[in-house]
Length: 418
Image (cartoon, rainbow, N blue to C red; front, side):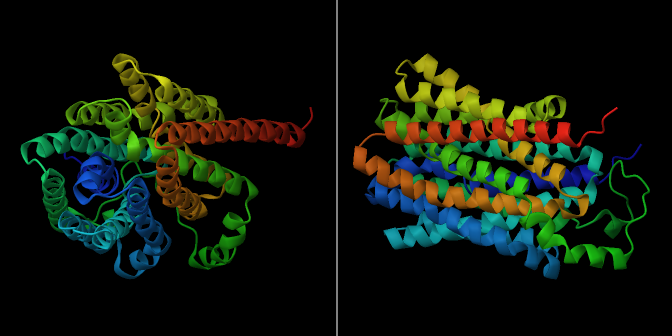
């Protein structure tokens, strides 16, 4: 029995997410303390550098759809991965704030440019009934990237004292370029390119072209005027601010505020990444059983308590437990959010809805490092930053509870009376 080539495509998508999220975005949290020290940046400048990645990412995710339509996903993904690799080399050679800002900005552009089309390929290669599972597998790629960065970067820093952060960017760059080459050789845009059907696809007739064109006219009204989708997007926006404080500043927090050495802090960062690998599976499954908003609220409240405890804990063992518990909920939020988008719009508009809430999420990520950098500089402590993250997470959890309650009331009002 031959293995469907869709599974090879899935492996390549995981590699793409591994490169564009795991390396392109989350590796920055592991390299940040050493890069800041090497370039003598204060926390305000560090926050601005971090925000440059998300500015590039934000601009990219809002425009990449046009390039996918014009050039197809494969070309866009390959170009974006190569851009990440080259931008990492630029960052590795940074000698000033402007130099580092430009390099990190284009890392962000490449990250968004690879991530969105990669997720789009899931819809091409897998049937709707499998996409939740596949999404969980794909999100694990980001977790693997965090694990790799958290383990390898501190080792490199110790071996190459003073220049280890530069060498780390070079190693990440080479890895991303190799992944890009694999995409050149093996990636395909659709199963029909090689006379295949999507995995587990049903032979349903597609809508006629005229109907698709008519539905396209309704797209803006269907998505952007959907109050529930706006509400979900705002919850995602709040989490974009909150979780980035953890993922970007955890290593520096452990070193500066808790007295960890670089290797120990890196291992804790890697532990969070390892725990996050299964988080998409776990919370996606929970949301299938108990509903999207109850599961989302549960995730948010777990993260709230972990952030509060992390802010006040000094015992190494307790900190590790808190980091692991946070990690095991990490990708639960994007998984549930992307699944929720499909619950409130017709199938035709699901990608548009996902793009819309991701845009709000990205705005949160953009402003998070700026706010956090100024806050840390002002208070000279990470306590205020982690408490801010906790408060925003709690508000988001309360919002999920409110949305579930309002929906339940609406369902009761609209249910037929027997």
